[in-house]
Each structure stands twice: as C-alpha cells, then as structure tokens.
Amino acid sequence: MGAIDQFKEEKKILEKEKRLLEKRKRLLRKEKKLLAAEKKLLEKARVLIGEKFGERKYEDLGEAERREYDEMLAFCEDKKTGKRQEAAELGPNAAGEQPAAEVAVEAERGGAKTLEAFIQDLKAEDEQVRREAALAVGKIGKPQAVDPLIQALKDKNSRIQKEAARALGQIRDVPLVEPLVQALKSEDEEVRKEVATALGHIGRPRTAEPLIQALRDQDIRVRREAAWALGCLGDTRAVGPLTKALESKDSDLRNAAQEALEKIRLKG
Image 1 (cartoon, rainbow, N blue to C red):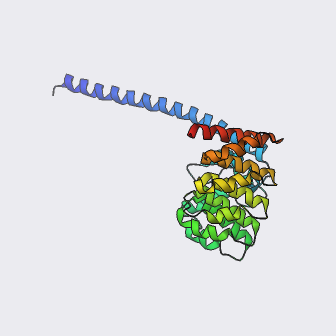
Image 2 (image 1 turned 90 degrees about the horizontal axis):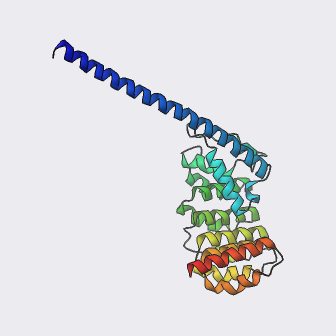
Image 3 (image 1 turned 90 degrees about the vertical axis):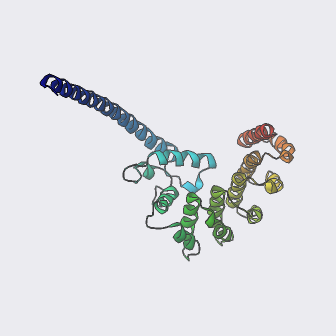
C-alpha cells in the first residue's frame, strides 16, 4: 500500500470513529433527557403516594387502591441497587411496618428470607410474624404456598385469616376453593371482604352461588367485592341478583354491579 492509499485508509478510519463518537454523544444527551424525565416522574409518584395513601396501611386499601399503590411503588424501585426509594416511606405502613411488596422483593432476590422461610413463619407464635409471612407469600405468588395459606385461613387471628385470603387471591392457582367458600361465612366482615375479592381473582364457577349470597351480606364492602367478583366469573346466574343490586342506595355497589353485568354480557 502506497503512502497516499495509507493516508486515505487512516482518514476513513478516523472519520468512522468521529461518526461513532458523535453517535455516542447524541445517545448520552438523549440518556440525560430520559434520566431527567424519569426523575420528574419519580418525584411525581412520590408525591402521589404521599397525597393519596399518606399514613394508611396496605391492609386497609381497597383492591383497586392496592394495585395503584403497587404500580407506583414498583416504579419507585431503584433498578441499580434494588432498594426502594423514599416513596415507600410515604405510603401504607409508613408507621414502621415493612411494606408487603418490599418483603416479597427481598425473598424473590434471595434476601434475608426465602419463600420457604416465610411459609414456616406462617406457623410462628408471633402473630405479627404470621401476618407478614402471609403478606409476603402472596406477593411472591408461588403455588407451593397454597396449602399453608389454606391452613392460615383457620388462624385464631382474623387479621391473619384476612391476609391469607388475600394471598390466595394473588396466587390464583388454588385447586381447592372450598376453604375459601367456608371463610366467606366468617364473623369478621374484613375476612369476608378479602375472601370475596380472592374468589374473584381465582375465578372458579363453583363459587358463583356463594358470591351471589354474599350480595346480601350485611356489610356493604362485602357486597361491593362480591359484585366485582361475580363480574370476574362471568356467570349468567348472577345477572338477576346483580340487576337487583343496581337498585342499591350505595353508588359504589351500583357501579360494581353495572360493571359486572357488562363483563358477563361481553363473556356471553
């Protein structure tokens, strides 16, 4: 290769490197803009969590509110360190209890506790330990936790029964729903409400009749969740009772019944 040809080749290589450098610069500028936008959105999520959920505990949130909270909290997760941002401190359990989503993330990532350890904790003497275990295994969502959670439905503490029902609804793959149907008769209205929600998530036709009966529950919150659950099932047997629920004085129940009827119509 002559001197001129060598010059041309080196010039070509240099120009190629310059183009690559310019491309990297453009990507860096774009990355900075994206990071700035992400920072703004993170701050917005933190503010929204603080304004909407404040000092409320996760267990006291409704089904839709829990989904909203989990979605915003998941966004606030630091992807590099795997730790939650300050938003976690602004929402449910801000008074000191570790959020269920955070407990579950620890387990999934091989943190201080594994799923097996949480399952063992369902039998612990300490009621708070049992409750946190039910929260965690529900968030992790593995089928091997179903049997221990069904046993937890019989716990002497109604709060743990409630968390066990919620966890079963989150797992969804529940072969035997009879224990949940029985729990729908609990004396505790919070337990009945969570069971109705869980049955909606699980979606077994066998539970249509018990949920129709729950539309007459003395607690309005149970009736609302029963209506929502019947919509998930899509069973036409619920059309009459849901139509009757449209006459309720409670607007939330009327809305739930209307949405359920629409779901049944679409599935039919």
